[in-house]
View 1 (cartoon, rainbow, N blue to C red):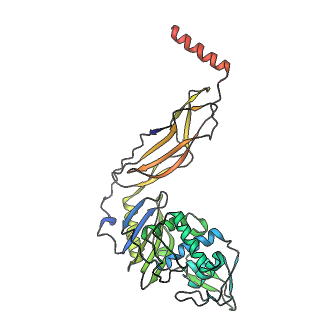
View 2: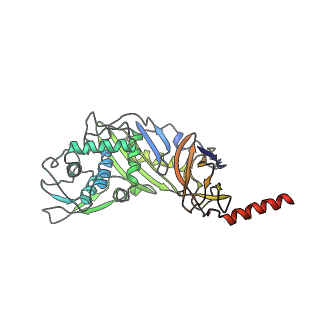
View 3: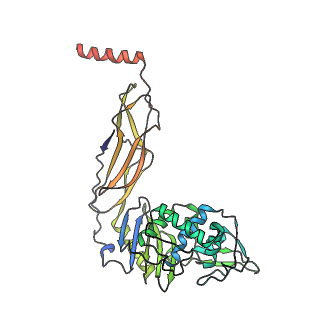
Length: 373
């Protein structure tokens, strides 16, 4: 049986800014939108975030993530007859042309090449159908339960859809990958062009990278059915956000406005970290009566004015000696409004040796002497 120790770490914040900032002014111009805290996944803004909608080329966030996870950047990827001449945006691959996977990914994420998407899908999944199955399996692992892929590029199909929440979840997972993060934050790149005396010049279609302070990416998308879709992210003052808007005519301006609202209304708040004491746990049969505890990872989250959060330690009533530094003792959970947002392992911060016979005799004698007095 485990005892739940609730630390007195309730954080009540009274910030100087207006609680009713940009996020509450008339909702969003997007059909659907969602912004998450990158650290905990907390929803900071939402509008119709569970409505199933087409996603256009924001599909390629998942395409790129799977390619990076399952391939090597130096692998050669060849444009098949199936990839050659795919409708829509293109990097103009010739049939049989070969690029490295990294070059294909740059063409995919900066110039939104549909031909690169199919070439990557066939290279990683063996076929478009096989790759789509991989996409759907990975989506479920991430928690995107209202998403279904049938292709790697996002051209219209009634069975190809997502939600703003799911798309933000996928983007958050992708942004944990350093290679993905580097590619989607690249504004310009040069890649080879077989049969030409010059290289392809790629320019990122995401205007936020040059126009928005702290922008980190991520991907644009457009079809007449999906409208303008955008997956975006930014980092300021310790708070990093990632989000999406679907069917949004003023996509860049709206994404900027919504992120401004998040940065105005939320402050990243430190709760407990590895260098701080998380209390003491009683020890049986040891040279000390208790052992110090600490966390392996920092627990922090964004909080708005007046919000309270708590850290709950789940540890046993006691532990038997010997105890070594780094020994697992339990789990610390960061809770807001009854929802666990993150957790960290609790470990011993010091050594407590098992008490020998001499130590036990000394302890008994000390106790006897205290009684005599």
